Image (cartoon, rainbow, N blue to C red; front, side, top):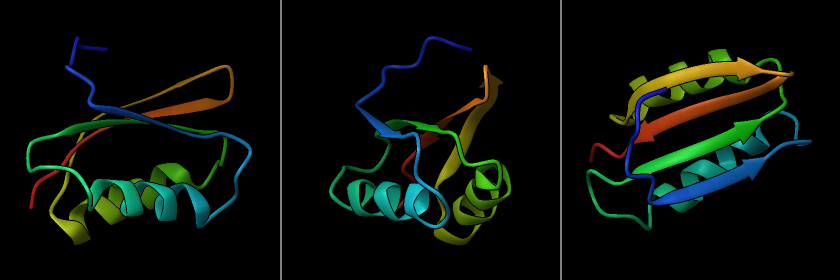
Length: 79
């Protein structure tokens, strides 16, 4: 992973769909454009969900990784 200046970390581990997206959507709306959020999730479907959500909302999925069944998403607020 690159060294991004993370503005907020959302720990959505243990939550199933759609809660990781719901939590992220709620928090990103309160942030300035260009802000970067790190999301941690254990939901297997979150990879597909975050890719789709970013495209629909105009946010940028900068990075996505998996380590020990934890998915990490680095997202930059677009608009």
